[in-house]
Length: 262
Image 1 (cartoon, rainbow, N blue to C red):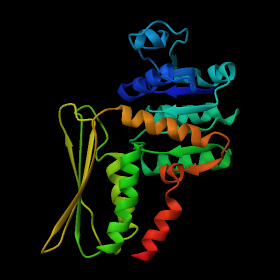
Image 2 (image 1 turned 135 degrees about the horizontal axis):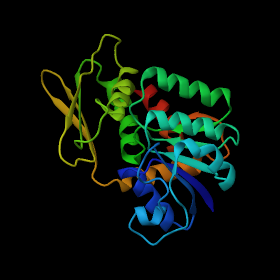
Image 3 (image 1 turned 30 degrees about the horizontal axis):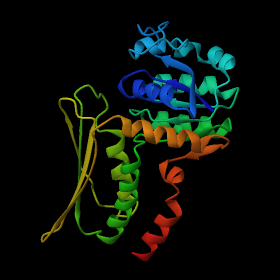
């Protein structure tokens, strides 16, 4: 059984906790919330409106102590940039690998995280969007961009009205993936919409003077993020280094073959 420490008890983190508690292949080692959260000290089961499970949510500032007591195999992180960095520092001593699904990092913060992971020989899957479908879309878009370099590209992303990072980490990753295959001067505008309760919609529009192509991925249930996170958590155990979902899904080698054919 895989023992998981979960950081972040928001909308998606709560769904991760719920899934772990119901999955026979996983067990919950610990749950962390941000400093000063009202959830700290409460039983995780009660927070999820389930029967008590005997594990209370702890502030991320207590992570090193808690992880030493619980012997977690892996972490899953759906928190925020500050909590993520605290979590990594706490995982350093025991070299606990994990999956970082947090978004909103600056370029400097991402550089710090990747350097920290490398220097301390940790294992991390970095996945600002951990859903399986969107990562297959990313692979497909690299092939499309290589095949249609003269087209105009435009990304639109739509999320719930409480999502603070604009544009989304996924939208930036989509644009970056296509730019790898497009001429250097090609610009890819990103339009962000924050409205209602959208879980996540990403659309890429390609157009020439004579035709257009549109590719869309929509997450209509947060369970899509949970499934991807659990797959990535199983993958990273026993590994060191920096990985993404292409590595987890094993599509990198096949993708290179397809791009080279184009």
